[in-house]
Image (cartoon, rainbow, N blue to C red; front, side, top):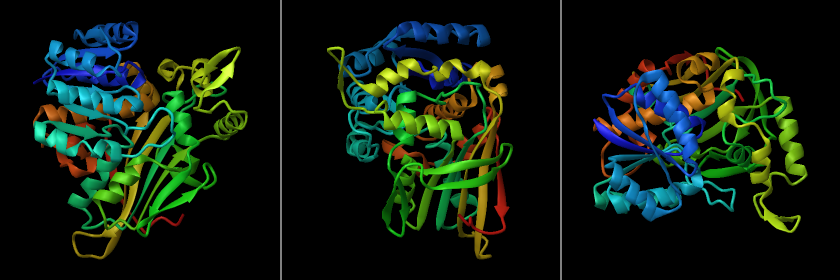
Length: 403
């Protein structure tokens, strides 16, 4: 149905490309490109062994707009799926405009030298994509991504309005490492240690990182400590659903993770500005990344389950007053590894990337312009979650959350 160029060769890409190959009727031709071609070749070999599908590979500097546009033209790609670093989003969007290609990513843009991720840089491309007759879909991972689609599905089928929403992300997996991040260490630590923001009563409320902790009993996972964080879907949901009075994001961390992250921050290892070492300039967090385990290598070691979902409160469509729903997915690390060779964190981002790409290639999400997931029709996406490894459940709760 469509030729696809995937940029980036990390753990998420490993999962997404496997799932694309398993849907060859939609993804008729796949090219995987990265700065390090050997990583692409390794993923392509694994895909060939598991599915029999051939994935083409290419070397690419994603910051080189002309080179990316040339590769789009060479492959005939209808869609570029950006699974690279968020610093590269704007360059890849520029390349798509130059070469006449649709665009999809899983995380919003942030400058490499400032730990600040916001949508305004990408939303500014709305007119350019619309005028070019091209579609850009932002944040087609799980959070952001599925969590936004969950909210839209609730608004379409259960609630007329959403008054408040909490997004809860629990990883109950254990990989046996003293300290390891579940996705790219540089991006993970920048996110976790950033100032907390949440939307409440028409304004952003601020608090220090890792200071607001709540214990929650997650389905399939059990009781975990979750910490309030800022995450980009809070910005897009509060923008596109203006009736929301409060929107918050929570993620679970074990005590060992919190201790390591705090110590690393205190000694300067999470700094993103250059420092001099032995007469050379280095960026501490990038050096730290080389020392930590590669999340893509942890699949075989990780056991346990993850649970991610939304708890939303609003006026019921049936006129029965205010109701609260919990909509979520439970994902098993070992089952993910058995299917595609990835742990659940990569799987829960890679599968929605495939499904979002499929929505565009199938013509369901092909309105010219730049769109967040909650702006798009949720139904076929939700059906595909059930069909392709991320089944979801929705339950009515007795009352809104009390934390």
